[in-house]
Image (cartoon, rainbow, N blue to C red):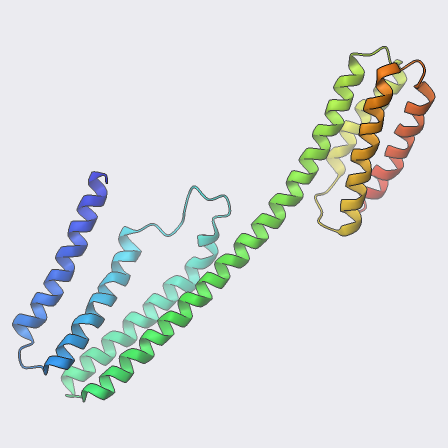
Length: 231
């Protein structure tokens, strides 16, 4: 535990101690059950405030940064709970409300807090799911482009004619116009392109004997790539 965490922990513990001590010293006129309830509620409100100031909500190590999408709901829920809890607490003392009324009021505020936290988690899961989907689509395009580049580099070490070499290089450039997609047809075309590239890799082992086959396979790739660019 670093020095910053030590100071934060001490500040939080001192805060809890002051809340408990304050009710014990100055709340002697309150019935015991109400005083205990107020102590619990005050500590919960204090913890919510500490969470806002001392504990960073956004996990910078996470690529999704799902907490960013959760912040709006999270902060709103904390504000609503804090205001309701304090209103019930202050009204209970000022109007001398019964323990049952105060308990139900605090339970209602706490229920809203739980529902809000649940909604916050759902929002975070949605953000993370969208991020994972977009990442998967991008990685699929990157993998396909790398496959094209590997074949282009492999061809450069052979005695393949210049025109065919240029066509392979042009295919690498054409990958710039392929948009990441999770459409089923797009994934099928990606798989077909990978298969065609594997076939060319095998054909490049003997470029003279397989020159016509390489040309036909490049033609197939061009047609497939043109279809893939539609997605």
